[in-house]
Length: 181
Image 1 (cartoon, rainbow, N blue to C red):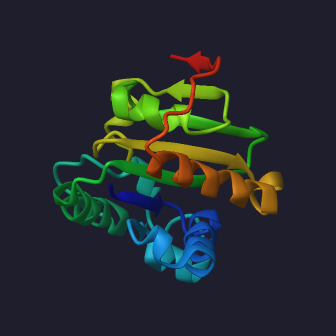
Image 2: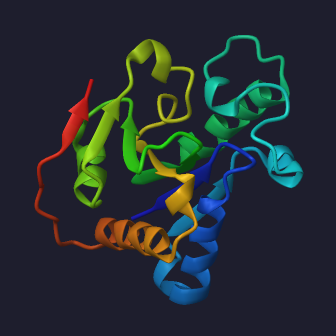
């Protein structure tokens, strides 16, 4: 089992916090979890992006901006590793509480959904998803938290619980979800 945690925007730090917490609290228990900072330049500058939004820069035939070139490198790096699950962590400036964003509802995505306590799922149309990270790699879902709760200990614990549920052989029972297509 291999799980990847990613972030796309330089000013969204929850993914990094999650990964650090897994490594400090869990030790070898989380050796199957990797982390990828999608936009290291923007992260160092603490801005969303440098030239173009990385999460709208995938799938371009002629990459020109830093983010479009970075998107191509990310896909080339991630795709061959065949991760079982990819969790793309975001924090929103819009009031959204917490929600999942997917480009499909296949078996692996449903397994991720069922491993969470999040009851709202948005499925992006293909024409939008193809320009995003989750629409460019397999078994990926975005997990979006409102910035007001993103810094809480409870949010970090919820994310660790998702990793634990995905890592377990026990299947969580599906609960009702609001799905927006």
